[in-house]
Image (cartoon, rainbow over all chains, first blue to last red; front, side):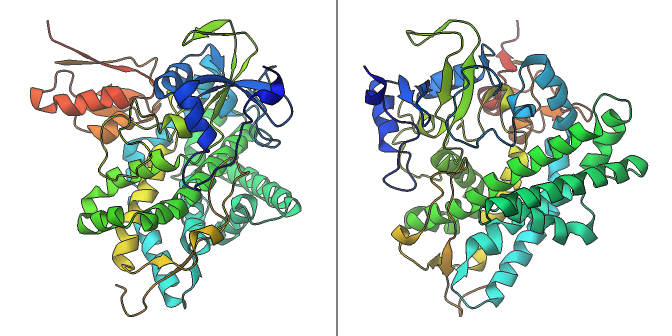
Length: 403
Length: 66
């Protein structure tokens, strides 16, 4: 087969909330396939659930984007994160991950719950003061994670507006390249200055604790901590933001499921997990490079081969999820791969869940008549972003029917 | 029923604590799994099995008592 005959990755979607149809075809006929990437290079593409788990848990497959053969699926994907925690392997990765992991343990994340709940209430109240049509992305999806991330990092209250504004410009997806780069420089300078302040006078926050525990004894440089903080901000912003918007959309597109959630609010936990499975917003997958020849499901993968694990299609594997293309908030059983799998599984999964549960336990209770203000085909989706989402989500409601 | 946790494999994702906070905890300093209950009662079997299945690091095991 010549390279031009190989399927192209990524490929276009047809229905905006389903993975591209070519992924479904490959999953059925060729779950370990060769694909062609935008620059003319090739990679393996894995679409099966069990294979995805096996590979993501096996350190034969390196996450180091600097290695020869690492799949280049998108021109700017590794631009901001090369050399960071998500691209480290083995003991180096474990050492740094364990510096940050205590900040994301359930006990600590639980302490964020009151702040998340009050932020959701405030944002919805502000939204309801407006005359619909309102863009839900701007009113709720973007500001919530920005507020939560600034609280988590320990940005002082008086400086949150500035920080949130920079974060929105940097990561909101609505700015020009120049604005993004400028906002990124501002955020790095702000974080560097904040780390220095916390070194002199530690507070009860993430940066202070890491400074005291690791920067002062010399295990981590202040510059590395600034890099980590930026990575956490990036990772915690785009993902949650887009899940709030598309989670709302998928409920509106599935009125039977929305009715179920309204009737039985305790379904919010499984509804959020189902959104994470069904939407799987990191739609370009997880990327690895093979470090020694290894057989995967009967195929010989050579040292230096690139591997793409298609999380979105693995989360639609009919061998694991019955009727996988159906959005079913009562689904239980096998865990989804929406946060990835293995040593690199999303560190902030509990924070994301806290935010999403807070949103979807009150959004439709406060605004029971919430509805799309435009037809689905007028919504612009972020096809070429590393994290899938929508540019805006115009919504409306019956003003006489809110709580 | 006995729960076995491999603290070297654990990546501190906290999935188990989310599922069964009466059985699993995480270290304050490193986020790594701690067992609050090494031999939970049979009534907790389903929750422990779920934690084993959901662990992203494959760091948990369920062993029958000998």
